[in-house]
Image (cartoon, rainbow, N blue to C red; front, top):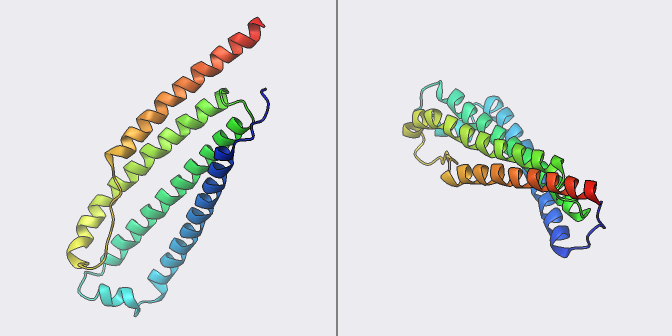
Length: 172
């Protein structure tokens, strides 16, 4: 194992990732509160927005909200994996098999986020005619697919780096 690094960029990155994780966790909690409010306040603002919508529109909105919360959970898992990679870099030993696995998991999480965003499309199509001033936000992006591909490639780079490091340590 190498000497731990004292790198301001890594420290800043870790702090930013911890703040992001806290923000995502708070957003998940607010979304949960929104689920409760959706079903416990039938005369509230949403009722006025849905006044002319069919009764099943509540369920469509609930489905979209649930999928959005799932994406947030996937984002939180993604950030946790990245924090562990940053920690290993800070420890001075990034080329370990665990980081290759973390990068693989991050790639699958990125793909899952895109898949969940695509799953929102039919629900959004059903709701859109009834909600003129209510943004639904579909988050699918080809950049998410490119990110996943990049992470899969980096995982292979890290796996190869870990193998080379093990070979080098075996010859010394």
